[in-house]
Length: 63
Image 1 (cartoon, helix red, strand yellow):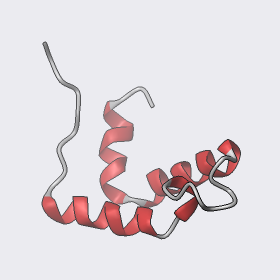
Image 2 (image 1 turned 120 degrees about the vertical axis):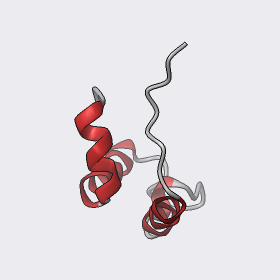
Image 3 (image 1 turned 90 degrees about the horizontal axis):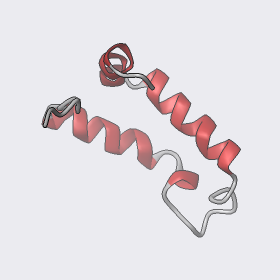
């Protein structure tokens, strides 16, 4: 079985966690926008576009 997952370095992992921490609606169910899928989708798209390591994933996946 082949895996298509991209492995990030520890520094990239930490950068991603810091980036995600800026957007409570994607991880905090107490946030008023947590259930708004349009907002959460827009946030994830912003994270993907702004987080440099994901550019590798975008070029190697079907996302």
